[in-house]
Length: 241
Image (cartoon, rainbow, N blue to C red; front, side, top):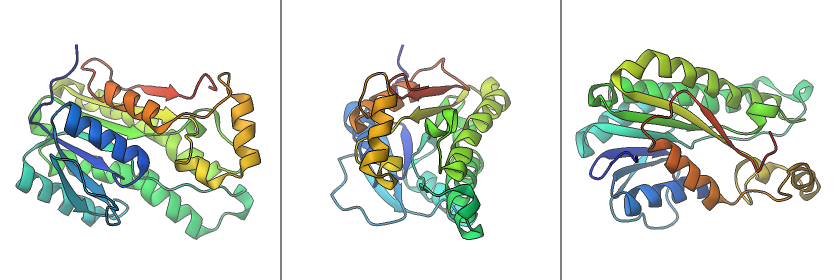
């Protein structure tokens, strides 16, 4: 059974990236949700019908609170939050600066926690008694990766947080999950790696290729709309983990 979200309000952060755009299109066009598309920067192309643009930086707590208040006031109570916002960093840990720590953790971890809290506090999610939150993790948070200690740690933490949220809010019929993609062609972590590094990932993957954005988006939406998946981290990595 698929959760019927027609007419409900969904929020997609990081909606200007390729994965965010694919998820947004599926929710708005295939499932007829009202989708709040959130990004720190302007959208390069017109949004699909049923989508409304909002500008916010989820690394700032005040931005998150104001964002969810605005979405609820303009569109209604939020039923679904999909957090695609994130930053990548490939650097050996001993060379990472305090600024690197802040850049990665403030968006990937603090931002994820803050936007989820804002959805519960101000977005009406807690009152829906039927909702879901899904964060985009990474295979690096499952198996680790050389030169990505900060990134891997920030993504691994989302799994622990989602298991805890699932226990805290399961009785209210709210579900919390993570989808952890492997490398995607031209997206996310792959953009920080050299072609030789990407080839090593292809060689290590049983399927001998990287994922496409559309493949990952399909799984994200499927997991988000499944009424009985809760507290899980779903790897979409071609068998790498």
